[in-house]
Length: 79
View (cartoon, rainbow, N blue to C red):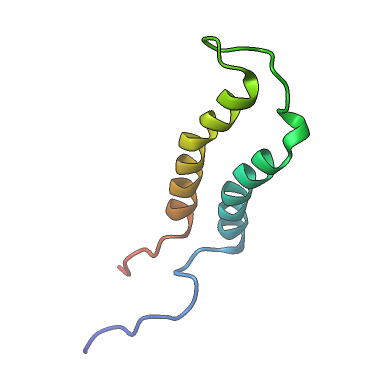
């Protein structure tokens, strides 16, 4: 294989980007494990208690957080 050798490591993501990616991944975990924050019935949304729709709202939220973490840490092609 000729050309530039691939550098081992994090793909060029600096420490600030890795910390931001970690926060994107940690936020849903903390928000869903801190049950006293959302363990209540009101407010309701379409007749569904807050306890249930709060958890359901985190499904796309987790996906967005994972996508943001991916974008922050992905390897960029060398120019």
